[in-house]
Length: 164
Picture 1 (spheres, rainbow, N blue to C red):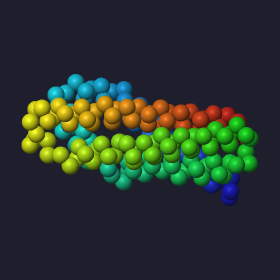
Picture 2: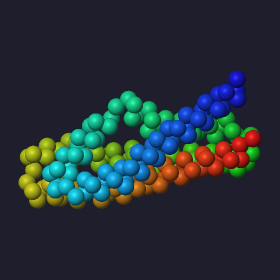
Picture 3: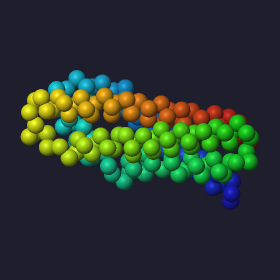
């Protein structure tokens, strides 16, 4: 029974971490550069629409479950081969800090700032200022999430190599 739980937690952790890494990678490499070409109003409207659409149960489960799954996984493998345990533990910490903390304390406040703004009431100068205040910091923090999720995913795969 314990073996089945370990495998289920590990597989779900890998799956959800991989999905999150894929989302972050895709966003960083195609969506952000694409919308970066839009004018200020269109850019900000796009981000508002995406931020509102993405807050749904499916996304929240996939995006935040690894915080719990990877921690439980590291605990369940505490007596495994040292490389497996340390790979799993570092993956959990990276995901917790690089996705959990960064999202909650950096990206979400920027999203909330944007969400509270009625864009159609702003002048072109105010739109430009809002975009400047939002875009670069959001992208910078999102790159951190992309790197953290990719590294966590890679460490999970490395941990499997040593898994006994």
